[in-house]
Image (cartoon, rainbow, N blue to C red; front, side, top):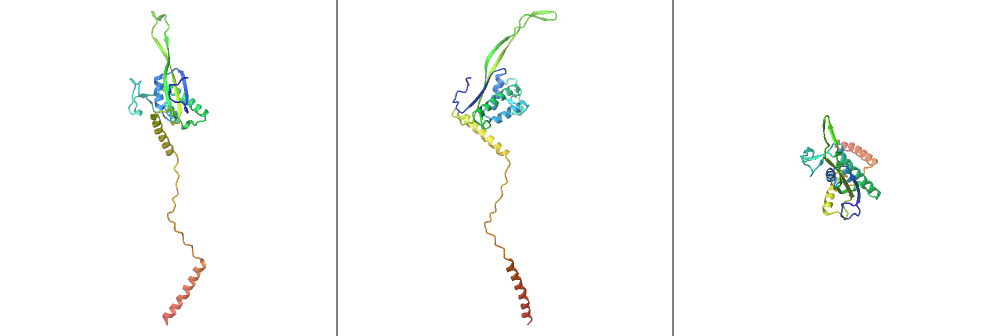
Length: 229
């Protein structure tokens, strides 16, 4: 399959899905939500959407769509079907990275795109339409079946095929991930070292102390006799 990623593909892992019976507009919105994110972070975002957490932001294709307080008043919704499809493709991309000897938990989504591929016309059956005693012709209204394709690519954010803008965005995401990991780690208590570097004095021996006490005891009566005389 030919990918729409037209840059150098060295060091980048791809995964795709084609002939998807889903709205490419919803798929593109989900791709915008996880683009340039860490693989594990993107997985948690998709899981939260499927469980009714933070909705997906729709930057376009949002006519007559309601605003969400979770998104700061911007428009969004919960495309659960499309999030499940994107999650499957992301799992495949991470498996491909493991097969090539890479660590997918340290990789980022450098490419995510969804496009419309095929359109099939579906015509309502013709013939007589009978409703009670009313007879007439069948409806000529038809609905088209639109299929889509999905592409995902994982990288470390330092590949040659990435632009400067991509590297800057992924660099900011790396700093956020590192800061979150640092907060999650328990703080180790560091023992404070004593600043006093003076050597302690050795204790006086017991025999010398006993001799000093005896000398003092003998000296006291002699001094008292001298005073009496």
